[in-house]
Length: 213
Image (cartoon, rainbow, N blue to C red; front, top):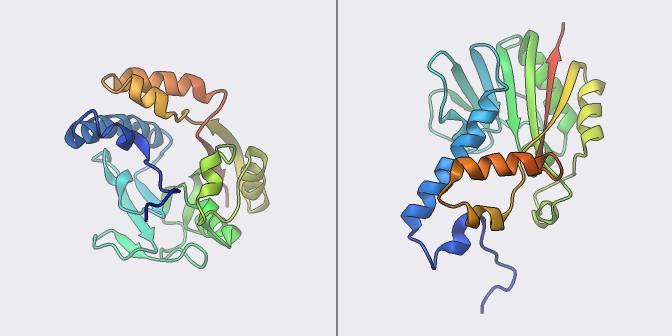
């Protein structure tokens, strides 16, 4: 029986018109722009990707950066440890210059534990970079693993409440299958348009903050 709720994601709805190899190539080119922007928020040499998943952030890593990861998935990588962010980050105090956490906070049942753990493992003056999906997108509530949405004020307040300072909220790009299709062969132009539209209706929101001890 056909699943009426199954939906195609990203550029997969164009499979009938273009080869999967080409679609993957264009999707990867677009994703590189997103990775470059995320890397632009990083400071220092020692960085933790909290909830690193399948290590996408390890792509485009600058040679000078020493990047580590933690995730609930058991990933075979010398610099990735197994750990549940609802409980503890398995690294020492004052160890990292930056902690990044992309599209993970909304999945956590105990988000304040994670925020306090980020504070603990960061050096004095260190930076945390948190990115969450915009709950205004219908797709947010279609993901049953999302525990709670984070409007800008909530993202700001959870950082303030747990000791972070100098908080900046940055709106990300706009996500649209129509734009993806129209600018399939122009990933750089697609990214510029998505960034402009993101000022009005972003797909994701990023909070950047510092810790002082």
